[in-house]
Image (cartoon, rainbow, N blue to C red; front, side, top):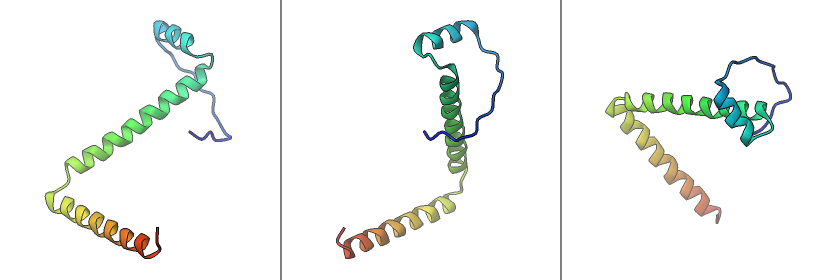
Length: 84
């Protein structure tokens, strides 16, 4: 994952046993916590997307599927016409 130039220092409280286990796996606590936050963030976005699509009306879902099929067909035609 790319690292931005600006970082902020934070203070957190972590279970002592968990911290010992993390320390056995890495020498860089900050990197481990940052990666954990990235994974958590990605999971939250996936959960929100899943919830959105699960509550979507069937007509809306069909509309999205139709657009996806059209886009796929057009992309295939473009790639074929360009010899790719």
